[in-house]
Length: 128
Image (cartoon, rainbow, N blue to C red; front, side, top):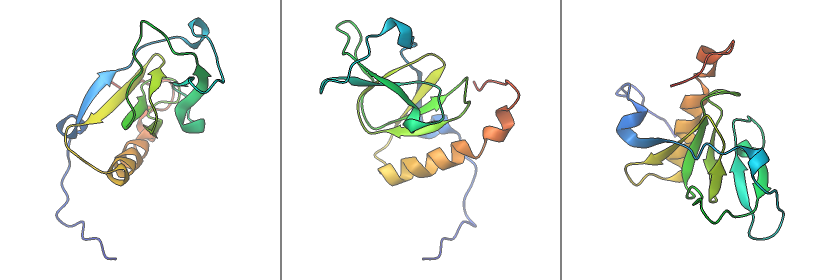
């Protein structure tokens, strides 16, 4: 397959996604759990799809929905992952929800583009 990129143009993520700040939870205030109803806790880590733990469902906090992209704004800055299950989000984490119906594969492509910019945020710099 030949991919013609000659007509590609720069774009802003905000034109394609609704960008929200996550739940801003701290893992130490959650109850870790391994039961079948446990919810992924996504943080700023660059490993394990950003999942730090599984936690018990919280009655007063609704999990983020599945299908979002998580992006670390601190810690492992710009570590980005597709979240295929509902999740709670830690601090300094953004979620991207597509404004249009795009495939998982398109989301993976966007994640690759975000990750390609990690070098801009080394040495303790944070993304906005």
